[in-house]
Length: 169
Image (cartoon, rainbow, N blue to C red):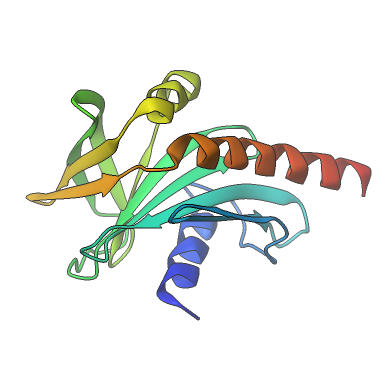
């Protein structure tokens, strides 16, 4: 399994994000340097869609939209050695606007996630942003968000597709 696949799997199965494990990817999309896919739960229900983006330092940004349209953001760095459940303070900016200040929770040794509130407001801010800067563990992690608007559109379409496919099955 690739690093991206392992991280998406962890991001999907973590109890704080999704109650059960993914079955298989059904819906895939890519745009610019973004890659995304949907995940089902063990019981065959649609669970979530995740879009990911690598930066030049090989850090990974994950944007997850679940079946309830709740938004979370994950960040991964191979240099971290976190303990599962560790909480660290995070500040995150879209361009020069602070959009998140709060905890990030370790869901593996190298992945932290932030559960966001105000999904509509955050998605609106993300659509026009050029970059995301996340300050975590005394590090500044920068992602250039080229292609973010169509990626977010694809995430929303992915969730709608997943809900529709599973409601007609």
